[in-house]
Amino acid sequence: NVEFVICRDANGKLQAFHNVCRHHASLLACGSGQKTCFQCPYHGWTYGLDGTLLKATRISGIKNFNKNDFGLLPIKVATWGPFVLARFDDSSQDTVDDVVGDEWLGSASDLLSRSGIDTSLPHICRREYIIECNWKVFCDNYLDGGYHVPYAHGALASGLQLQSYETLTYEKVSVQRCESAPEEQDIDRLGTKATYAFVYPNFMINRCDGHPSELVISTCLR
Ligand code: FES
Image 1 (cartoon, rainbow, N blue to C red):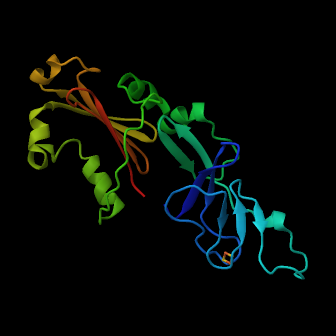
Image 2 (cartoon, rainbow, N blue to C red; image 1 turned 30 degrees about the horizontal axis):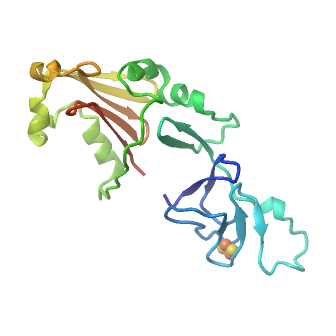
Image 3 (tube, helix red, strand yellow; image 1 turned 45 degrees about the vertical axis):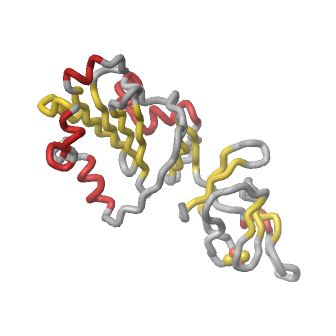
């Protein structure tokens, strides 16, 4: 993501910063990999992985310049299962791992946990897709209560009892659930419902029935 940079510092602590150099606002980093520091590609200012400004090039003689005033601007960050969640509000409250579920999922947290969506999710793989559409269009498709499923996803529809489709709304979360078709329920699974959770504004977690085991897919729009 070009808007912020996330790393682990030398002590293994997760850190996140606005991806903007404090000098003349160049983007600081892109892509992923391992670094011991961030060096700005524009004039070479160098920051530690904890955001501290380590070196400002050709700055000698500049009056009233204090390196401590020009560290990278931090963003609150925490982990939840295999996910790293960044928080952009200016709340002074620290976000710690064990409260992320409650803060983000609110009273939907219990239901989702019972559906196998919780911090125990393992990371399997990551895939990125570029979808050239407005964010609202994607969200509208996700949240249309299965309206498009019989026509756009015929194979999926045959594995669901669409008449059982329900939408439950919570504080920042909308949960759509649907019973599997009877023949799908013979398989020993975590419940018989497919679950699609949308966490405002851009995080979606699907628990789909898969063979031979459950499959959980998360989508993060950016
Ligand atoms: S903009 Fe980064 S060092 Fe100048």
